Image (cartoon, rainbow, N blue to C red; front, side, top):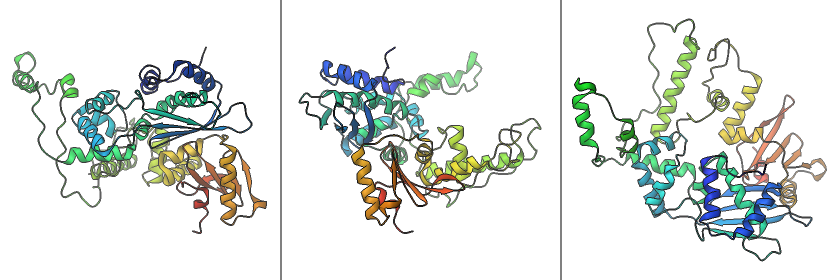
Length: 404
């Protein structure tokens, strides 16, 4: 069975737009699909407004390929943020780290096309093929779908807005104040609330369909946000004996929830609710809010496992990206890129005789520098026989060799 590109809504939407609306030569796209399925794209990184890749062709060195993507300015993004802020469901999902497909329509209403349309993609390649796109660039276009499968927020970066900037602007839009405009269904909802189920007069709450579609009132201003999160109140009785936590564990979880809520209101973090269990345990261990796994799923009876400490260190230096680089298998970047990186390490004062290069890793005495597929360099140090993430990422390898 042929390899399909796009396994999530976002990946498939990218491929559909590429093939149907971007007005790219279908014959060149067919060649590109073949190259992509043959794993000829050896590296791929997404940056603001462009995709950078290396593609293996018929020559000894990989071709350098770049896809420039049309970006939007601040005024256009301001309209997008306002459009999203008026949709309760879309806003709530975004602030929880999820991207609803309906955001595409929100952006379109604001005059911004997130998915590629005619003239949005400008391919460049070092190969001798004069066709636009060449098969190497076409292959890269298809593999963007895999990037969007992993993180659909990458689409915003391609169009000129990072996930962090978008969420910060969305939070600001909700704080600006002002009452929400009247919704056409408000009268119907009020009548329903007055009568209640079967005319009982009980408040039935908001009808789910209407709640999802109505405009979202902004958050009230928080002029006196405490300098630190509060401490959860004690509860009068212990949890049941068969509960999946003990009292100290429940207190730790409640304290952590209060701290996450405080950071979210302050506007410098999201809820962390989208993290999987492994990543969330690493986060809590790194932030001193660990609830180690014991006989019950969230008991404080056991000490942290060595691997949890290992992963918490990666989180402390890089969050989810730190965990990703810790788990990333060795891969082969372009030879020229690694040669340039080795030269930079030598210029930083490391003797050439003690440097080895293997795949995406440069190893010296007591340290290892790894180039992630996302394009960042990470410093590892060997402790107790294993490589640990030792510093936040950097754009250049020699930045990780500075004293101190």
